[in-house]
Image (tube, rainbow, N blue to C red; front, side):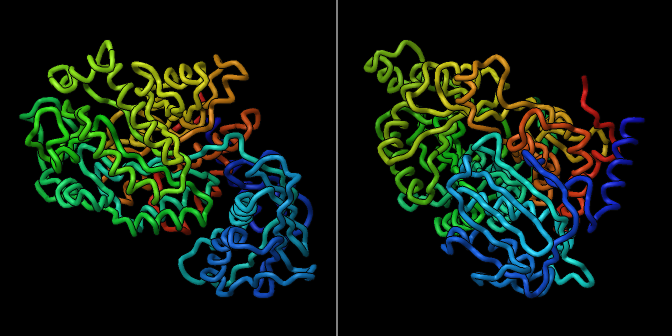
Length: 548
């Protein structure tokens, strides 16, 4: 508790300096290099932006902070007044900056100068400015009597990893489009650049496919949902019989993708295969090995009914992806690949015939065949596949990227084989785990992953050689929603732990320090308050120092 007291004391000292020249900059993620200098820059109704060059992406980079000023300060920051050298923010692309997302930020009393290799670097520099402004900049209405000042400083910054993301499961519990937009906004605020959108599951199919309307007419809704904690014993289960569901039209998806692009966020859709497919099978039972019938599941867990391996199933999946791929400009399509029991395949004459025809020794190799066949189709459309670490079983598809969730083992194995990896181990960054020991916490799936534990993880396993380590693309946190019933509940589970994920993905390993992170987090919480988000507060009353 003595250590906790010292952290709180540091935090109070830092907070007392708000609006003045500060000893430190309260930024999350912590920049690579930063130095506070004397004085302040003051934003007012005469402040102007100059963009060099002035193009659409550069305008996207400044749009968000300009909108915030319009709401909170009541005036619009003027755009592009070349030749102005006073009370101006100059945003300039500089190809000499080494890293694609890197930037330099020079804040002086009369001028702010931002340079970046690409417009996304300009955007990240402006998120730093946003965090240095008074918290009222996040207000949803005009804030009165606020001096919009930031301390003068010099910053050189760039992320450690190129992939920094959060996943949202909209299948176990459907999340409205408006919340998906908010989720993207918040991760971009923390300089994360990837939104992994989990769209199909046993409990719901969430994306419109025009060629197969039953996927959303039937597969997007379930008639009952498990209440409370999961029990293996049927007699202990209680059910909510309210019909639950929803889906995103293709126009909704276009809106989400466009919104994300303005925040330099890539949206990666996940279409599960061959497992976690009961909602699709309930819609089209002929895609299964048994013919059904099936119902969209309201129970959590792993189910034995998965896609069959007949040619008609591959034709269905290719049709689905042919509608999905044009909606998402991302390099990747996520194909799941996890938790696919082989029970049905072992008893299915068509699957056994497939194995014989293709010379496959077991059902694990049949799954590898399934993934590889889908990879060839996805590659033919100019995309790459990414999947959970089970896609390693039976042999990995040639160009696949692995998302390692069952600890680090799958990621290590894939990197050693020369495959790219995104680390997302359930041991540290599954955000459906409990984050505090308080008995007041809402139901979670289990586990315990407090913020200090999330922060302690390093995404590059020490066992990898420097050459193998290059295959670790980055880091992602996952929110599964079996026990997450609403948008407010989702935010509660994700924040502030996502701030720890953001810093781990961005800040150099040698600069990470939990005590210093915690002191900066106290400032960010004021900003969460101004945003009006329902972040978790129980962690504040618990011991948080890193375990040795």
